Image (cartoon, helix red, strand yellow):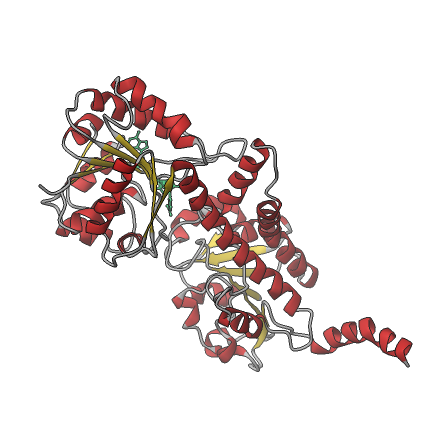
Length: 461
Ligand SMILES: NC(=O)c1ccc[n+]([C@@H]2O[C@H](COP(=O)([O-])OP(=O)(O)OC[C@H]3O[C@@H](n4cnc5c(N)ncnc54)[C@H](O)[C@@H]3O)[C@@H](O)[C@H]2O)c1
């Protein structure tokens, strides 16, 4: 008989996982404490906004249902993925407050269940959380013993919002942290059935898997921050161009080109908190994660650096348009968005901020309230702005042409963090084009380098 699954937590990750597993022909029961999420899934719709989620749920309604009852879900499935929030606490660690509640409920249900059941923690947690924080709750509530009576794994997913279903079904590898071989064998077999691309499976202890998940995210953020550092340097070198440098660097197989673009910093619900959590973990274990701390510091200081530079060149009361408010293109999520921080920072400095995002304008309006005027279109922003900041490489902004920026008495300054409009705007009289990561004043940059090295040449003479 084919494996039946339950997914606890029908949020941004869990709802997509439930739908994806159902789309592979398995019966799935989703559990959420939120009545609306349960009702929406049972009505064949998506409880959260995510690419293809609504369609996938609708197409697999006969295999996917939702309930408020953990008991019902556990008793009618073989494997349970737990995908509840693990928010950052005051120390920067990932809190187990929601997971603990879910695990107690699952434990109570396990007490009533005959036969083996595998509980898989999917939410991001720090090393030790699954074994020392959550496993005891399962044993206490069920009166059973992990290993012989039920299985336990830690197995995170490596997905990006906006492509969760695709990423979940087509990962580079699956990561199985296992309490014991039996639990790991079962989960590996499940993934072999579920995944579309036959990915390699990495099996390890619970703690190594917990560390691997956060290590992967912090490594990527370090790479992003490294590229941002290069961008900053390139702006100060005559002819400097971060794309030239990173395109070459990316050809080295040890490095690779992804996440090496040099632009604004990273944001969103996951990345920013991972370095903080890793730093917390290191300190708690009597050491330090200096690199994680440096990455986090550099990323958080980026917006202030940009705002200071801008404010040094513009008058108080200038209208600045921020195009792009979500933390990345094609997203409605503004959590830890650098563009939102930038808008707030400029507003505090006395700049009049107008802004637009194709998907995130509504949430951003609530967040920015009196700190920016959210307009209905790019054109509305361009009509009012003397300075335009393009903060995400959104297709709507890529499609802009020189004509869109025309019609003003004075040239409009366009700060293009992702250099998406260089072909359109370089050399246009109606625009002062400022590509981030490139030298825009070769003479001044050259003079600075000359001053640095001409002394050495004179000494050698
Ligand atoms: N969103 C991402 O891109 C992403 C990526 C990788 C990992 N993660 C991790 O996955 C976890 C979940 O993230 P998310 O973005 O899906 O969160 P989310 O806030 O979108 O959704 C969580 C859902 O869990 C429900 N919930 C809370 N407690 C519950 C309980 N006891 N039983 C049943 N349902 C419960 C909530 O009502 C909500 O619907 C987090 O640990 C996160 O770090 C998220």
